Image (cartoon, rainbow, N blue to C red; front, side):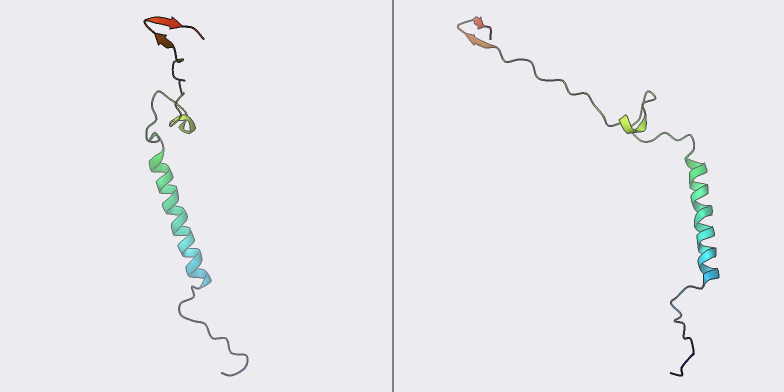
Length: 75
């Protein structure tokens, strides 16, 4: 190969093509964003914020009460 000659592989994208693809991607993302306006996230009801949609309070089990011959022994 001669010195000083730049050989570009056809698999590389030109800067113009890359800019064109990024513009197209930005346009697609903007369309998706516009489409999603007003659509609530899945599993959200009653106006709950999205980060609380899968949050449930845990209720502890009732205390253990020992029973011997129908007499309740308080702890």
